Length: 232
Image (tube, rainbow, N blue to C red; front, side):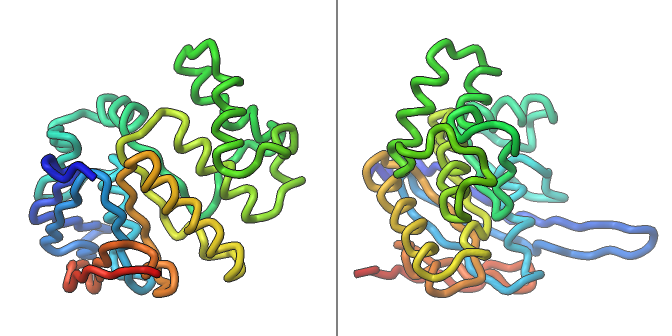
């Protein structure tokens, strides 16, 4: 793994939500560096700020203070349209709710973002990605014809369509049984190793977090503890 240049740098990030006179501090001075090709788990309970942090890293929201730098690009210096373009070019995101279009097949869901970007070989590449995530026999199945684990694999293929430098996974195993969850995490680990893909997984589940080479614990909006682990 090439660790000379960080994929992600988070510097003293705050996120404050305001509703009338009420302020809710979701993040309090969060700081983190993720090296290129790393596999990091951000672990915390519901309400700890982990999904807020994921949205900020993905450029889906902006911090109230601090900096988020991906590949030397400071997201706070980009306007909303520029952030969306940067996200399409460099970041893949997989949510717990797969966000698949129900009337499209697996291959059509994967091909759609590439088609919108003008790629002429979108369907050929979609097939290749679905084979890579273990769904070569499910190309023409719609989401309601797939299991929960299979839908997550399609969502991962969609997230890989733009050849991202950084893949974000937000509680994607939360609704899956333990065996299916293990298979999804094994797939993500393989993608991390074989592609050299920088991977950040947000989870409340210690058995998911232990798959990562680094665990970061978030509590009350602060990154409090980090440790290196070895998963056998």
